[in-house]
Amino acid sequence: MRDTVDPDFASFVDARQGRWLRTAYLVYGDLERAEKALLRAFTQLSMQWTRVDDPDAFVQRMLYLPALKPWNRSPAFPDEDDQVKAALGELTPAQRTVFVLLHVEELTEFEVGDLLGMSHTAVHAHGLTAFGRFRAALGAGDWRDAR
Amino acid sequence: MRREDVPPLLVQAADRLPEPDLADAAWAAGLKVRRRRRRIAVVSVIAVFVVLLIISISIEVGSRGNADITPPNKPPTPRDYLAPAGKIAGIDFWVAPPPGSERLLDRLETPLGDRLELPGKVRPLAKHKLDRVAAVVLVKNGDAYEPLLLGRDSSWSQAAVQLAPVDGGSPLSSGAVSPDGKVVAFPQPGKLVTVDASTAEISQYPLPAGDFRSVSWLEDDQRILVSGPGVAYRVLVGEGGDGEPPLVRIEGSDDPEAVTSPFRIETGHLMRYLVTGQWTEEGPLTLPVRTWVGQTFSSGSGVARLFVAEKLPEVPTMRSQPQGVAAVSTLSMRHSRLLILGEPFTGSAQTPAGAGDPSYVREPGCCAVLGWYDQQNVLVQVRGWVLAWDLDSGQVRRVTELAVGELALGPGLRP
Image (cartoon, rainbow over all chains, first blue to last red; front, side, top):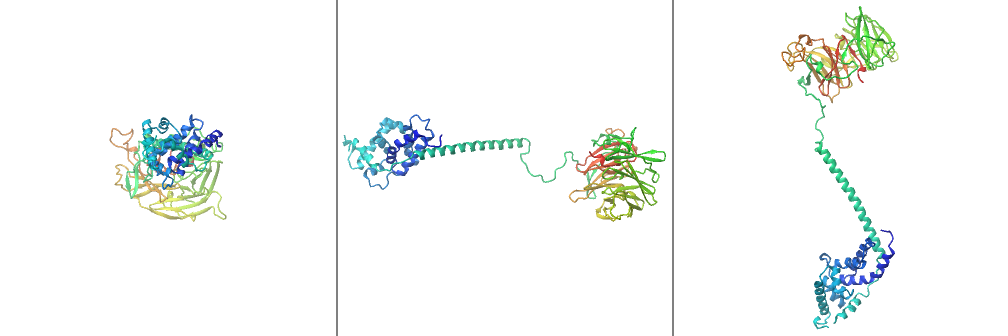
């Protein structure tokens, strides 16, 4: 491993760090935790930079899987005035992660399942429940009324 | 709210975040983690190696039976250590092998060889000088005696001097050889004769008329104590101090052989020689002694002399008067010891050849201390043999079988 940063690695990080920080912020509900998680994911990638076949999937797995761990569950968006963030904070970590990946990263339910190690059914259930609770929190009524 | 309304809401919620710059930090952190892992791997390998080394050493030590290493609570003893037979007057004693069994003892190698006998051919000392004398014997030539000197290489030389008998006997005293082994002294009527083995020079020192029988060297190799019954002189044979008289009368003794330096043992006392020609009491000595025999010989840490004892209930004897060698320590850290000379075996089918023969009985006068081989071995002449008594182990070894009469030993015995 070279002492100075690899140019390809720097280009890869520069191109994705802004988008993934925002996604992580929505998943973790805390900017500091999101930055730490993203830095840890990039650090892991840097150590295997020349050996990883799909760097995007590698980073996403390193970034979002820790949010589902039982010991990594801190309240998301505590004391938040923003209605959207407060609505996200009422979701469980799994629901919030699936919900964000489906609607921000625009992954399919199958891709989310592969990424998080969940079945398609579980992803579908989490996504449906999260959408309903998100809507309810914003006062948009029952999701079954939506089209 | 429809599903397509959600992404804009979420993007707007995270829209105002600062733009991160994580490339350099991530790469540096990766580098740091990688180095730390490498260090841990190296340290782990070293630790495993050290643990394996300690385990192997423990197994090795344990397999030798030394797993429980504890400091000894008493001084180590030699492998062939013999326990003392008991105590006499509070001093540990050993019993010497019985007469007739000397040939069966282990041997102490010396220039004397296995059997010391007069040589068939001897070279003159002037042609074959000796650097250190191992032994001195006398050969009788008519009424006179001629000294034969044995070198450390087991070669013999004859000194060109005729010695007169002293009191009708041999003029060889057991203390004849100087501490450095170069000069041999002989008491003669009215004079003292010395033979320098390294130069073949013969010297004579006049003495007052008297019956001198015993000589004993001072440790400086420059002076000799010459003694007869009740009279003794210190003779300067080397370089003395300014104005030192060549002959000084000193305190004598009824027993001429008692006058020795640097120590003398007499009944009741261990005494140290002073430069004034007197002896001062060094310590008390309580042994059941009837008479002392032979000269007192000193090593760095001990003094030895042979004695004829009163009845010893600890070592009963049937045919002979009990005799013993007293090795008295001059150092407080070491103990004094006794070697009691035993009797021949009697009436057993397992006895050595010749044992039980009355001619083997060690009568008083047969035996004497001849000197020290080293700091721990006393050389003792018994009937027909010279033995070495190891004070540390208690073992007695044979030195040589004697086929000569009078014998004096010197430092040339040692390698």
